[in-house]
Every structure is written in C-alpha cells, then in structure tokens.
Amino acid sequence: MENSNSTTGLKIQLKSKIKPTEDREKVIKAMKNIFTDAEIVVPETDKIYITVEGEAKNIERFKELIRSQAILDTARSVLEKGSKGNYTKFKINKQAAYSEVVNFDKDIHGGIYVKIICSDEDELIKAIKDIAPRTKYGKIINEDEEIENEYENKNKK
Amino acid sequence: MENSNSTTGLKIQLKSKIKPTEDREKVIKAMKNIFTDAEIVVPETDKIYITVEGEAKNIERFKELIRSQAILDTARSVLEKGSKGNYTKFKINKQAAYSEVVNFDKDIHGGIYVKIICSDEDELIKAIKDIAPRTKYGKIINEDEEIENEYENKNKK
Image (cartoon, rainbow over all chains, first blue to last red; front, side, top):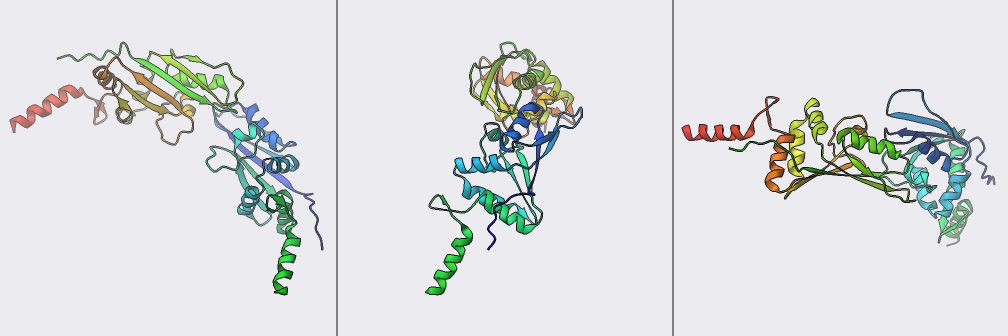
C-alpha cells in the first residue's frame, strides 16, 4: 500500500488586500511568517486599495504551527471544506499571521487567501492527510490503517 | 428667540485601534483628515495591538465633508442616535477617513470612535443642529422656524 506523505508538486497561491491604513511590508511579513518562501508581488499602482499576490511551495511552517497550536482537527476540516478537484482554498487571519499564529476564524476582515494546488485530486487528498492528519485523543493517527482496522473489526463481529 | 449655532466649548474625543499590520502614521493621518486639530497620543508599549486616543476641538472639516458628500440626513440620524445627556458618540470608517471621506457604514472593522461632548444637553442639541441641520428637498432648512411655521399652520386650520 502506498503511504507517501510527499507533498512534492504542491503549490501555494496567496492573496491579500492591503487597506489604506495598512503597511504593505507588514502584510507581506504576515504572509511570509506562515509561508516562508512566499514570493509576493506588489502591483505598481497609485490606488489606495491594493491586492498583493504571491506564490509559495513550502508548507512546513504552516504544518508546524497547526501542530504547535494543537489545531489539527480544525485545520483538517478547513482544508476539506475548501477542497474542490485538485485544490483547496481557505482564509487565514492576517493579524494573527503577523504574530506567527494560524487562525482560521471566520470573522476575519480581509484575511490572507490561501489556495493549495496539487497535480490532481488524489495528490490533494494525500497532501491534506499530510498537512493535517486526523487525531484521536489529541494524538496523530494513521488514518488509513485506522480505517482498515475498523473495517476488519466490523467484519469480525 | 436664541438661534446661535455656536459650537464653542465643544470637545471631540477620538479613539482608534491600530492593528498589527497597520501603519500608525496612516491611522493618525486618517483621524486628522476629519478632525484637523486632533492631538493624538500613541501609547508607549510593545504590544502589537495598540489603541491611540486623541482630542480635537475643530468640527469644521467634518461639517464640510458631510455637506460636500450630501450625507447630512444620515449624519443627523447618526448624531441623534448616539446622543445621551451632553454627548453623542458614533464610529466613522477609518479607511474612508484616510481618503478624506466620512462614512458611517455599520460594517466598519475597527473604525474611529468619535465622541462629541458639550457642556450640557441643550448645548449638544444646538451642536447637532449646527453640525447636521435638517434638510428639505436636499436643502438645509432652519428647523426651528420650520417647526414654528408648522405649528402656526396647524393652528390656522
């Protein structure tokens, strides 16, 4: 059975609005705090409301944070809820990100839009399992084994 | 009959939160755009969420803006709704203020808190009439005369 947790080929698209009273460097810092290798493009414009976009590949810091903050279950449900085909998209709180905290709270005003794209749907499912594995009693479990065990247990009864 | 529009003695208290990704100078600029003589105090703190407070006396720019934006009726209702005793309080949109626009929209996230304080309730009512006089067919009316006329007209019938 293949049980690869490789997230190679995974691409992360980032987007955030910068409000007039915001400091663009601070917004970029917030994005890079979570996606460390993000390359953010600031459009050349005189407009006071601007949108910065970027791309990243490194998901490690995001993974670390959702583990250290013990929000794997929330993260899993957010990643699953936002998934469609080969990608999943969700928002994270920009202000929290500035303080190196991942927060998926709904009442975020102009958060950071995150889109994680894989080569296909199967790869996305693998990536989600890798990023936010299921837990049981607060511990990460191997959900594929778990499902097999449950299946076996059922059949034994 | 006294019909003074003097707003002498009027005091304006201002307050605004500065979010981590915001630039404090831009927030202060937003406040000063509307209340030009505002003196804003930035607390000395290492906290990433800070609140700046200030005081102003000059209401002229605010008055100009609600006239040029033709939002006198909205302003009047906001000022009346927020009034209690000798003061009235309300919020204005910080992002709009940064662009020298007065916006009372409810869906403001961390706006600028404004409290206009007068010596007593009568002075406040006078101040509100002065700041945001009633209009009829889009034109400012002298509402005290208007009420007297209406009263007279009723009595004639």
